[in-house]
Length: 164
Ligand code: ZN
Image 1 (spheres, protein in one colour):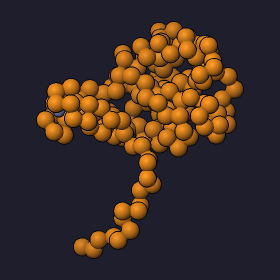
Image 2 (tube, helix red, strand yellow; image 1 turned 180 degrees about the vertical axis):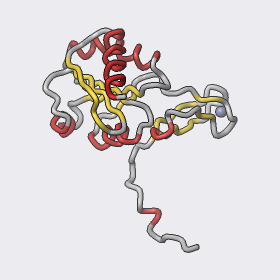
Image 3 (spheres, protein in one colour; image 1 turned 135 degrees about the vertical axis):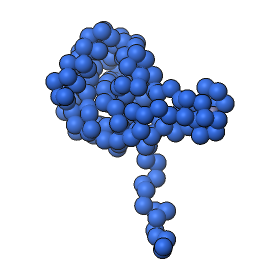
Image 4 (cartoon, helix red, strand yellow; image 1 turned 180 degrees about the horizontal axis):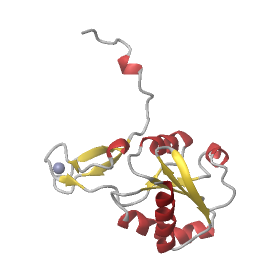
C-alpha cells in the first residue's frame, strides 16, 4: 500500500460538512455529518444518543449553502431572509417551530442573503422571505412570503409527497 503524499491537501480548508452538537451527557462536541443526519448518532466519547438538529442552522455563504444542500441525507428547507426584512423577522419563530418538530426528518437552514450577494442571484431570489425545499441537491418547491408554522409544514409535506 502506498500513501498519497498530497492527501493532506485534497480537502478545501474550512469546508463545512456537518453540524457540531454538544453531547447532552458528557458535553463533548460531536460533528454530525450532513450526509448521516438520517441515522441515529451516538457521542464519540460516551456513547450517549445525540439528538438530531432541532433548530435552524445558518449557512450564509454560497459555498456553505451548496455543501449543506448537496450533502444532507435529509430534505433541506432553506429560509432566505435579510436583517432589514420585517416579514422575515415575524416568520423566524415559525421557522424555529418547524425545525423543532421536524427534527430528524428535515434540516432547516437559514440563509442571510445580505452576506453573499451571489446566493440571491444563484437561487433567483426575487422577494424575501423565500422558503425553498431541496432534496438530494435539487430544489423541489419554493414559497415566497411569511407564513405560520402549520402552513410551512404543509408546504414541506406537499412538496415531498409530490416528489416521492
Ligand atoms: Zn458524550
